[in-house]
Image (cartoon, rainbow, N blue to C red; front, side):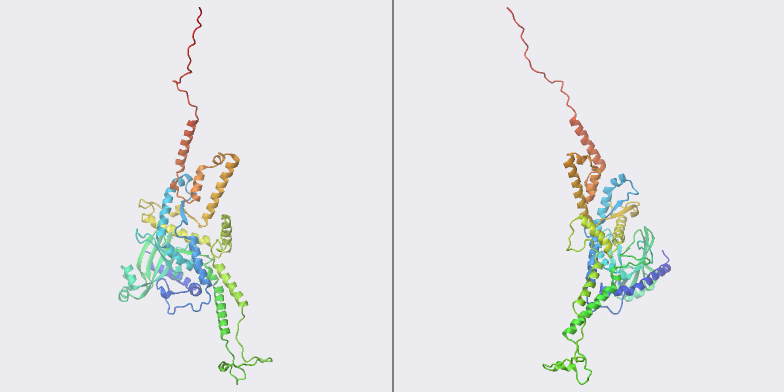
Length: 526
């Protein structure tokens, strides 16, 4: 067991680091993803006044945040399709060994995706991606039983505390969860700390529980939970070979551990747009019912003019008019600025590498061009998200399923299984178009050779073993559906032997009959 006092000091230091960002998060949530913690007591801070959205005059940032979360979900973790796989590292294993193990690797990947798609991962990721507008998202994963081996929970970024680190992946962190006393007793019945009596007497009272994750090495983590008011008494603890808190970030600026999202950096623009639209709305209201200013002469009250039927007030050509309406600059000046700010926010939040749906993709080359342009112009670091979200989710799922003996059909754990010996290959949904284009190029190559060099030219210049692998990968098919290289080599050998036997000359049988002749008669003389 770890020293709880040392862990509490580390937690408190991480909490103080996050407190410097808390005001920024609350401001961001107010304008982009409005904070409604009154509806969600768990996983959140508690305050007396609940902010409402009546001061939000423009919803461009809110709609862009929802669209951004959906785009990231569809791009990184699309539901019911293959977005990644484990493969043997060719730098550590020979190609012969990789080919022999391919059927087993296909079975492992199939089972991982089966359980991922059967879990609640898709729903949790969709909600956690909203936090990426602030730069950091987090997911809690647990294995409840063989029937529910993978179960995920969304952790709000505002309740996540990261230990300051410049590592590429965050593993040591904490998060605070609000729980009722009744829930604490039911979930952790062995708790015997100083708050035990209070929990029993006030079952509906809300308490804060701090969950922690400490990294020992790549395959060893310490997971524990304590109450915020009783940090020296454990609710539970255990050592694990996988992390249960998966943290993923958008962009990370040098010297910072928290992620930097587009919503954080564009917050001044978002607030400026909201203020300008609010002034524009006020201006429209003034036009409908303009305020009147009191005349300097004091003998005349313009407000009373509204009571006169058909009254008219003469304008003063040489001085100030007695009545003047308060107005802002009107269309198109204000509207032009509003449209400019809305366009800037929408462009900053966009992450779809294929661009606008009004411009459909026509070829794999166009996909490559648009994807390259998106990497240069998008505010999202896709490569970092791939490394921190899909890769970690896949690694943790593989370790959990192996621990429960669900990784292979034999229902047993694989001895010495470690994802460090494997390589995660991310499969982008955009690769389908590229794969189709590669197949078309291959077919064109074979057709040209056959047309100009004869019937056997295409087969003579092709490596049938590599073609078999190429077609299997490009069509995204399982290797077990086709013969292995050894089986294919044996089949080709049998075909060659059969063809050679048919080409040999046939010997004449010994019983063959000759031509039929009648014997010639001898000449008779008299």
